[in-house]
Length: 302
Image (cartoon, rainbow, N blue to C red; front, side, top):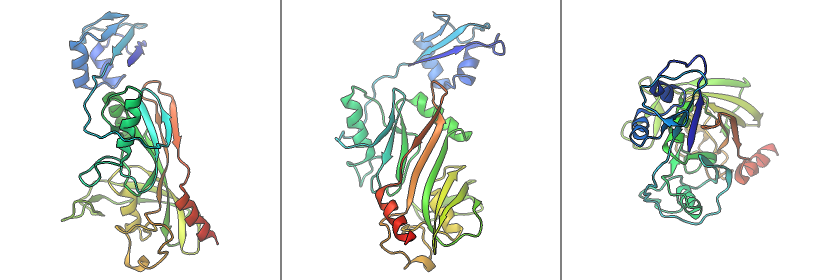
């Protein structure tokens, strides 16, 4: 993979190292590896990182990642691939599917299927999810195919260039068409998995928009400003509108409502957008609502 930067007047006289870090977003660790292997070029000639550039120069970083061992069993699966290139691959994850192997789920995960898919194309690399989805949350999930791309997409996530939108069915009715839930989230004391809102938690912000209101439920669109574990589920519970089907983050008053409408939390990753790590062009990845949520909406509309 080659990263190329044409030096502008603004960047003239700056050092190669500075531009590698600020313009190409290459980490200090990777710069050292490229330096040792002579893969930093200025006008097609190997260059020292302390060299200064001039307007019109062409700076190149030749990034080659060694084949890495991955302790994931490859399994042939019918993956719903939304987008794939040399940098990344995006999957439309079905519900009731774990993203990455765990002690309880060593096989049958998205990563197992992705490992098989990549090996069949001669690609040996670690499976690097840019973000994760809960087992029972469906929709778009993006995997980076090398650490540079992973770091670049995470950087975009931190500066809100990497956007995530979800669709969810929640309990209750709304008087406002949109709103913001701004409540810090932390791990629930004594629990490995559960989270709750707390003044001592990490800043957590979720925007929502009411797409369709039913008698006692609503279809919402969520946009994550931050990305905490279980953020939408925790924020919905705290706002008094838990997701339909969510057994972890429900409320007593909704315990016996809409039982059987859907066998999981009604939450779907509908859209992920970002700038491509190499070209910089905007990328929008969409996944349609799965059948179980479509069926639930049909029932609610009757």
